[in-house]
Image (cartoon, rainbow, N blue to C red):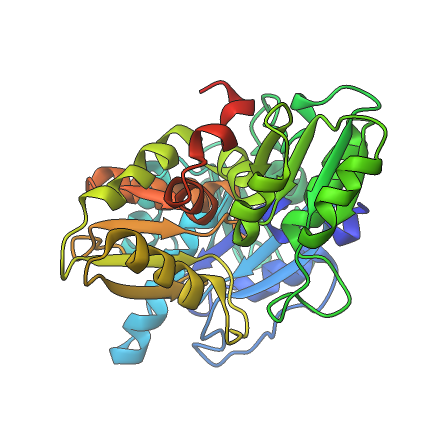
Length: 396
């Protein structure tokens, strides 16, 4: 996977925050060397968070998020401020841009405290260094840097400072490579139905194939009605079968018991969040009563088909399993509610489009409010009586 094609979920997310006209867009253009953001003297030019995927040396693939001003006004302004604060949940490195001629404001200080509370590495960028001539006023902390977007003063130093904010990485959890040895066979079961995108595989499937290749193993991709025959003619027992959750029951029946079985969704629960938490959360379905509400949440937004798994298939399976009058609430994209008290459980997608920080934020919100949370694949496996088998590869 080239750096240019790195999925957004795998990129370092850099959030740019500050008051209106502090120079956020000018700083973005300066550090990227491109006119990515609209620069204007009119306050409130940026009205929604804007995401820009790019390469930022020496850091590598990043997503830069330009946010609305934290001092916006009026009813719409308050909504824009809320959008800016939502971005914190996915921000790996925060940059607070301050108009150096005005200094840090109350809003700036409050935002710095939010960075600290959320344990987000941050830099304070004091803009308009070319105007401020008094060197004494520039004595700041080590995570503060004075720059000029007009003269490009200290822009290179700012990029170096951004790169230093990335913590020393512990080995990242593999999707599946840690379960494999070189030359192992892995069979991937990929339904091609109305909900499948035309002409391509979805992101979880692409990433899993890449991870298998990284392990020097062999991936074989089949549709669900081809699995049984493929296993017969393969000539070698596969180490693992990975399936789309929608056909879990059929694939389980067609896969011999001596072959490990799991799903893409379960792999992503281990990769992005907390697999043990999600396994325990699935069992909450057995405690649901009439008129309880289940939140079904997806990390991405997409055009929903007539047999969409999140809004059609999953609710139907839950209703059939519980035989209760369950209510459902659906969210997608960034719209994950902060108040979860209305829900008896949360069923989340695999989170392939969310970065690790945002997925863990959502799990933590549920934990803090004592709301069980699971994901599609784990709940489907529980409903169909194959959960123990599907988590067997992970030695929970």
